[in-house]
Amino acid sequence: MFQNKKKSSYTVIIGCGRLGANLAGTLSDEGEDILIMDRSKDAFRKLPTSFGGLAVEGDGTDFICLKEAQIEKAATIVAVTNHDNINIMIAQIAKELFRTECVIARLYDPERECVYREFGVDTICPAVLSAKEIDKLLSKRMMGGRP
Image (cartoon, rainbow, N blue to C red; front, side):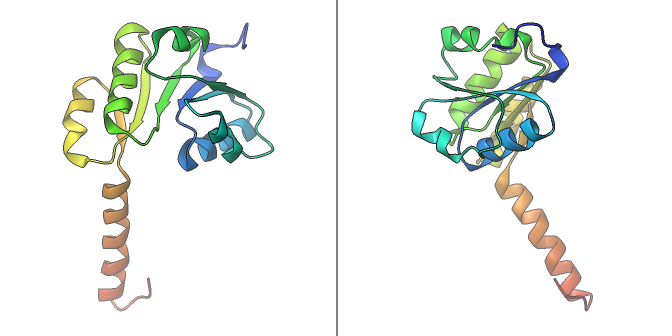
């Protein structure tokens, strides 16, 4: 594990789907200390070959798994599973039990954002981001530009 790493350089990502694997690879390439956790060992096949962090099979809502991942040393926790309820639970655990200052969670249902905000969790919502990008493209088109 990351024995004497500064807290600011250790990130725990929970969920090794396309987004989690891509983020882990990018941060690893930038020299960050990364631990990525997923319930399925097969999910780690999505990680790029250049990934230099740790890949741990485990449940991101399990206190013991999180302790083993040394979550208390992490400066940032990113919850990007495919389930909003799991992501909010991970975010709550990180904020309340481990006092992690920077917690980021993906959510699919934009109406749930207020729940995350209550806990001081930053959110990324693909539906909202996509709608904003489409709106920009449509605005360009209406102004005579090309998308």
